[in-house]
Length: 309
Image 1 (cartoon, helix red, strand yellow):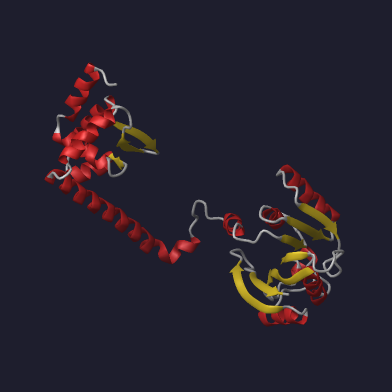
Image 2: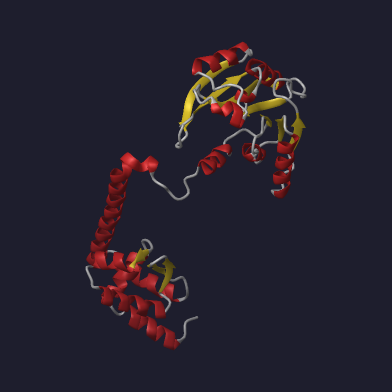
């Protein structure tokens, strides 16, 4: 219940057409003082005075966001009295004019946003944008992946393995290096992930049963295989009928230094060459495409291939 003194202050706050117009606009959406100045065609000091008075009686709340202050309607006992005033005057020409001004403001915002993207469109992909990381994109897309039994052949740094584990019923992580697997196990334990099984072995001769996995992933592992065809045949063997294989590897290149420095046995694959290997492994619905180029020299290009058993 509102006391007599509070009621008197509320009535005084409502006894001004500009303050009523401000409340009406804030009933539409949250606005800044600058927004209100633009719509009402009123100076800053006057708008600030009205907002401060409305805040004092609880009709308006504010919040800070960086350097800007946003205003919205209060939700306390005072709000009920204001709503009665609004209902009685909802068809007023002043309110109608303010709604037109609000729509003009919204259109200007949309125009400003369009102008920004038009201006940066040509160089947008080269800009440093907050929140745009390939890991973030991959994690988001991973949410669309089926909840199934995965095998990750050649785990490397384990980042992909850990991401797969977040959506999989189980992940079998296969690598030739026991140290790689130990590092993966430590990272999984630190994250509380318990559905990864580490298996030491060669991807050309997998110590895994036939038709035991729904999805097999080989990310930047095939160029390390002595016999790529044998590795792909093993991947096909452990897939269930209808299971899918994902291969991410390098497009054929001439950077011979990767053999000694990075342990590569093959200098990538051509699109046609990789497709032929997948078909020779007995897989169907083969699709191979170029996916991304490294931004740093020598600008390796990656291939992405999918196939089905």
